[in-house]
Image (tube, rainbow, N blue to C red; front, side, top):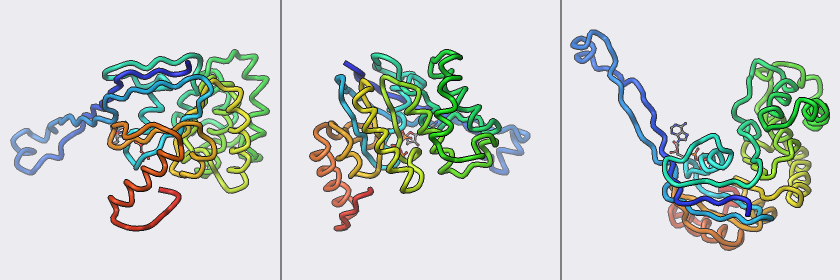
Length: 254
Ligand SMILES: Nc1ncnc2c1ncn2[C@@H]1O[C@H](COP(=O)(O)OP(=O)(O)OP(=O)(O)O)[C@@H](O)[C@H]1O
C-alpha cells in the first residue's frame, strides 16, 4: 500500500474584507466588514493507491487536483475524512510553491532537502547534483526572484526527483520548462517510477498521462468522476469536455 484516502473533503475558508459602500463606510466610520467565503475543493473522495502505481490526475482548472496533492503531501489537513501515506511524500517545495524568492536556487534546494527530512550531510552531498541537474548555469546562485518561471520550474522539478521521496508527486504544469528539459524530465520520471513506491502526476497533457501512468482519476468540481485505466479515463474525460463545450475539437491538451 502507498496511499489510502477515505471520504476526504477539504474546504477552504477565506476571510476577506467586504468592499464597503459609501453608506456603510460612513455608518461604520470606515471600518470594513469581514465576510467569510467557503470553497469546497474536494468532496467525499475515496482512493486506494497500491504500491507500484503511477496515478494520473486529470480535470479542469479548479477541479481540486492541486488540493489533492497538497493533502497527500501532508500540508493541508482534511476537513473531513483521512489521508494515510506509507513513507515520505515529496514536499510542497517540489510542487513549486513555497520557494523563498529572495534566496538563491541553491539555498532553496538546501532548504527543500531539509524540509524533505534529509540530514544536513545528505543535503550537502546532494545539493550540487540537484543544482547541476537544473542546467540554469550561474543563475543557480542568484536570488530566485530573478528567475523566469521556467527556471523556477526546473529547480522545483529537480528538488522533487532528487530528494528520494517514497511517494513522488509531480505537477507537470509547474515542472516542465522547454522541450529539451521536458524530455529530460520525462526520462527521469520513468526512471523514478520503478524506485518510488508510487507516483502522482497532475497534467493537462493527456498523452503524458497515457504514457506514464498505470492508473488515472478524473476530478470535476472536487468530486471523483471516474477511476480506471489511463486510456479509459482520458477517453471519458475527452467525451465529457467535448459535450460540455459543444465543439468537436479533439485537443490533446485540455
Ligand atoms: N488557498 C485557497 N484558498 C481558497 N480557495 C482555494 C485555495 N486554493 C484553491 N482554492 C479553490 O479550491 C478549488 C480547487 O482548486 P485547485 O487548485 O485544487 O484546483 P486544480 O484542479 O489544481 O486547478 P488548476 O488546473 O487550475 O491548477 C478551486 O475552486 C479554487 O478556487
